[in-house]
Image 1 (spheres, chains in turn purple, blue, cyan):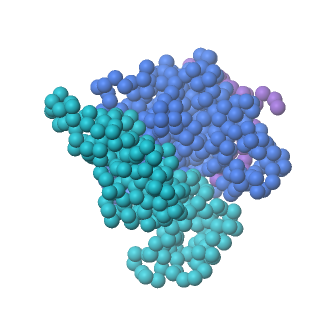
Image 2 (cartoon, rainbow over the protein chains, first blue to last red; image 1 turned 120 degrees about the horizontal axis):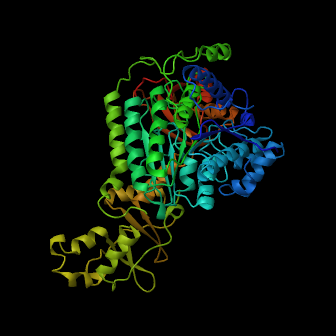
Image 3 (cartoon, each protein chain N blue to C red; image 1 turned 120 degrees about the vertical axis):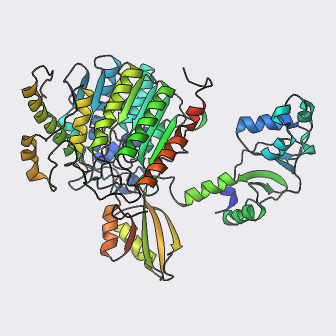
Length: 66
Length: 341
Length: 215
């Protein structure tokens, strides 16, 4: 299998480990454990970041590579 | 993806093999039961070995980044599957990435690890993995196991043998609210990190203590998800030169709770101010059509998302007493010289 | 359940000529509260408890004054005439023996030899196992009519969900004599599916119930 997780250096302080393949941990459509929450979180962060960038251009933030 | 060798730092080879077979549809049903798979909680799905090993790999990657100094902190929200046992799946968890990561931290980096678990369910898999090991300290704060899964996590589970005194549990009462929850967490975490003096902190960030969570009965709000990472961040800098690895965990209101809680975690970890005010309208527009519930409009919960809790003073008092009992041994030892080096 | 299943078989024992000092150190080191005293044939001749030793020890204000007392042999302080049990006794009955005699330790004798020991802690542990809390599970409570077949009907609902039951306790409902409360520990993190099934079949689920209702 290809290198599974990509790390995303967003600031020099912290890395965010993510791969869309994490969403393959899926029991069934109606199981309470649902990794769609990872997508919802990432999307909220991305949109939040856009908001931040408008406020402050000094934010160090690399866009998430898909 | 974690290798078999890495998984087997914790898991039985026979179990890893069974999970692999199950994911290919080749594990007989009667055998699956012995490994805790094929149940309503942990059904078999195609490729379950690869999916589970992948998230373990993510946590190990986070560990490597922090321990080699490439980054001060690292986050794998796909991890935090704290119910996985040596030879058995349990509570939606197949492989236990945190247990594997702690063992990996010990073997590869000879690190003393403090594991802090704020999931609403007891972090049983991790606790039992290191129950007799004084080089790993576990702290779990969770809803009392009197009714809730997995039932363990009582205050008297303190470890055994050489590991006695290195396992800490705060079972908070059902319906516990922000103030009492945060007081318990802050007091215990602050004193335990001072007692144990870890090299690295691993936090499990289940987001299921919120009032909205469908599987649990606590009454917390977004406030705790703002404060949980803030304290972890501060203490990691104070005691571990910043070394902090964080993983996800439970969280079953995936619309109203988890995205906000985990965004807070990342914003805190990456030293951004944790957000306040309204949520991004674009985000709301994107996801509201898919969501079965009305999405929250702001980062913080408004007042009054739940009816007042009738027995609040008693619940608060009980939690305070629990924390006092929990910390008694390390408080009474502070004057003597039992502190590990 | 029989005693043999829960008794401790690795027994820490002393002989009656050992000193009180030895017993004191052993109790501290092994974190135990009772030591059976045996002869060379492993026959039980006495029992000492941490309380017997404490009674024999000098006051903490006089630790230097009566040092020689601690060198006395154990037969000077041990209790004889000990209540004992047999490996085939029932654990439930042993519980009653503990309560009636106000004891916290029972040596188990087979063919005159000491073969095991049971303490109050062991009894509590077996009670804990009885309730199933030593295995990961959720607890639910259902109030049901006190009549034949109810347990069968309920267990069918669990079977349909492929949910394993760790333990079942039954106790009378407080407010009515025609109903009983079933306390089930089930191997699932999500009890709500089966709770819905139970409610659909008309059963009264006491827990889990809606938040806000006191426990």
